[in-house]
Image (cartoon, rainbow, N blue to C red; front, side, top):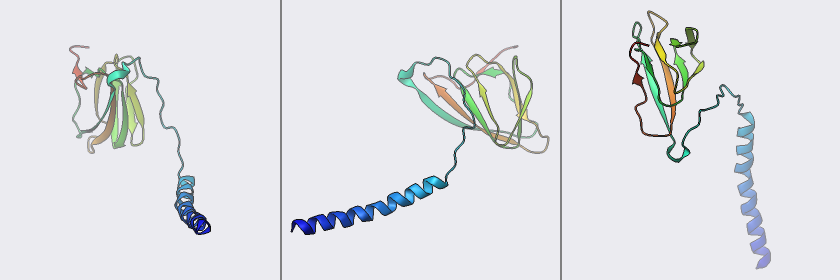
Length: 140
């Protein structure tokens, strides 16, 4: 009886090792690389929230001057995004590019860099309080 239990446990264990090996093989095929790293400003960690917003600028459409009360990381999905943050060079980000705006940065404007195609990106906000994600900046 004890020998049967040991054999059964061994059979179950052997059956469980197959998925583990398959998972290890799958993981071995995955490759990772750090695309972007940015130190964050001091945040109150008691109420952290991440919000991801998809933004699309149609050809010719543009944002007005604004800032974000929370740090934001952008990742361009398609098209080309022309962006100008005060104190930085006017920059064009293409699909696959990443950018960062801190809570003190003034974003003078963004738009699709193409007159024919939209620009679409994801904006990842890390906030430590409930706040609007974008705040207008009068006459920067």
